Structures are given as C-alpha cells and as structure tokens.
Length: 107
Length: 119
Image (tube, rainbow over all chains, first blue to last red; front, side, top):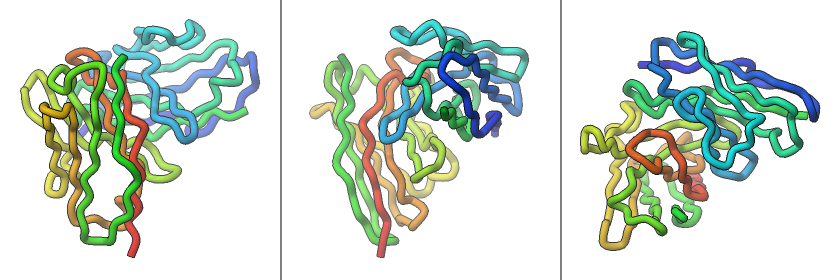
C-alpha cells in the first residue's frame, strides 16, 4: 500500500511568512495528489489537485509542486485565516484516497 | 450548488451498528461518487471507501471490508454508510465527500456526523 508521510507535523509561523509543507509518497503516484485545508470543527477543503492545480476560488498564495515522489505545498504571505491543518491525499493507487497524517500550522 | 447534508450525532454501545446518511442536493446522487472519510478526535483523516466510477464499483479500504456497507437510494438522493460491530476506537467524525468530476479529489464534503461508542 502507498503511504504518505508529511513533514513537519507541526509548524509555527507568523502572518506574512512563507511556509512549505512536504508530503513524501512511498511510491510513484503519477501526480495524482491533492492538498486539503481543515479548520477546527469544519470539514476539509480542497486546495490543490493533480499536484499543482489550484482549485477554483483558492487564493493564489497557495501553490503546489512535485519532484519525483516528493510533493510540496507552499503558502506565501501567510494570512490569519491560513492557520489550520493541512493534509495531502493520493488518488493514484489502491488504497486510493489515502491521506497523509497532517501538518498543523499555528501562529 | 452541491450540498451534502448528513444525519445527526449518534451514541452507540460496543458491538452495535450505526447507519449514517448523506443527502445530496444540487446534483442527483447518480451524478456523484460518494466516499466516506472518518476522523477520530484530534487525529487525521482516514479514507474508508467510496464509489469508483472507472471500475463502476464501491471500493472499501481493507481495514473496513468486513464491517462497512455503503449503499445508495437514488429515489431520495441519499447515500448511507453502515458500520457494524462497533468498537470504542470507532468513535469519530464521519464525513461523506464527493468529487465534482470522475476523479477522486473531494470537492464537496458533508458537515460530519459524530459517532460516540460508549458503554
């Protein structure tokens, strides 16, 4: 089974900062990777799909990239509403739908 | 505007079963592939299973294969997830989710249903 390992698990930053979250897949997922944002008490929200395509309505300060089996979510110019938990998800191979363990971004 | 509205919180005893519903509006259920994701309190997201339009079948994560049944009622545009033989560690929020297209990227999410397993 494919495993996704996110790093770091916890990240502390300030408004205006640029942060990077990494998701490493245990095998090739052919760019079939998404990033979600989840705020406390809310359902997750799709930010990026196909590794680097921004979901409609998501601010352009969010971006995704990939290098082999390493995927990166970058948030530029952090805003107060960006402090949340972020998850990656692979949809390439069974079990499709697998999530990473999450990265909590706090002020 | 697609909306997924789930049934309310449940409290069940160990060994019992629970059936969570997810009503679709804005689309018909037949136009969506419903998936189920759970999240234990303070923990991460765990995909449980869902409909794969490419294989035209419901796929369930191995961990849940002997305990989960996912069904749909197209007459009421409602999807159901039944979890049997409940354990304390099944206490979690259960979300239904769906992609907008024939992908597995979940554009739409229900509000979540809290299941508490307690004796």
